[in-house]
Length: 551
Image 1 (cartoon, rainbow, N blue to C red):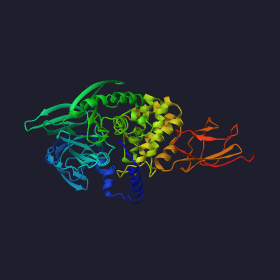
Image 2: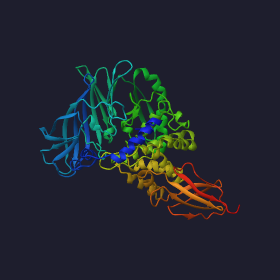
Image 3: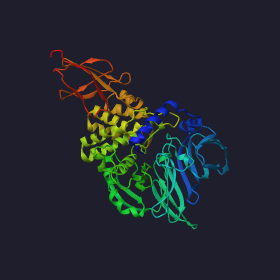
Image 4: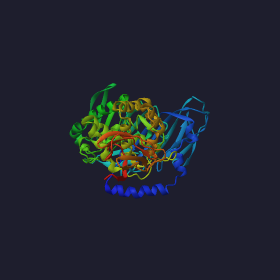
């Protein structure tokens, strides 16, 4: 997903996030949703078969979800999640109805049969109701029941943050993903549903409906599962990528077909750039799709949704204010980039959402870098600093389904750009980015795993850097004094033991400083008249004093 800022929104966020930091009180429901409860921990999710009948006439969903799992340790109570006003109507296992109780959004199922370690089991959950309607997708999750320009129903889901359990019953925690998934979605003729993965079969039923069967052969996060129902037309092409031929499919409304054929040429440009930076597209087996929707867009796995008006920038505007953002389609590039960071590498806990958003906010700069050069990409990244609020830490609160500050976008991108400068070896940096997607291929990960991998591969202790930018709101300040051409310096406005090296220019000559939080005297062979920090480091500088007693 992405974060859109304007002057008005920034003003509101400054007030709301300050209130959040002071007043947020987590509840039992937050813990049930955000933690690995005992009723979740004992079983490993392996497969979903989600069947849903979409009813535009009354804005309802009814269906079932077959949940397959492997028993990790004995237990007879299982937690399933489904948010009101949706209701579970029955749960069965091995043909026997099971009893269950509801605790807010969590449903606790009493299993009759003994659950033996390593045994493969399944249960069938039947459900229905009128799911929460999203007023402002994708920022407010829910189902959108709209009409296209021709008056046809246009129904889509988007539920990052609020959770997939908003409309279907699942194990709604990011740490556990099914190894594969089948979606069977029934809609009125002549509408078409487009979901994740590949279309296995389209059945035309005898009651004026059709059922599309979409299969995902790779692990998929819950919030990446989507339904898109509309009067869609389809075109396709093939991208010749690092792992061979990648099928690319595009689903749009008929009156936008010609615009889409032109604008979506950028999909191959995106794939080329990101396969260079991040490694092979992670889901060749499931194809790549762009699906037109009535909201800006979302990173649904192998079914990336797009609503950017077939324009470059974000709805025609450059997010970086540098001019470089006018050269590409922001939504196409950003949301597709999440196939690597969010869908391939997924956060274990919502608190670590920076793994998704920081890398992909930074990917915009890498896209510019790939096509227009390193300085252009750097300029784009620096331009996004105007979006940074420094309101609260980027890391959220663990075990309560709580993401951190929206600074995970632009500030996170500038943190990664700063780390690139510290490593000072673009080939190594490229290999680290590719290595992340290989080392953690199709995995859910914790922040420390990503941090430690980058430290290991760079052979640098970057933990103080991560702690500063992810856990603190202050911008590190290089404090310095020039006295008779000699310089004293230290890091201020930072965490204890912050010791990030920084590239500076002394009398316009490049020099690497290694400050700590203690004052140091610089041993330099020349008199220093001027000190400037390299602009690609997200830090500030403060000249405490400049004195020349010899004048």
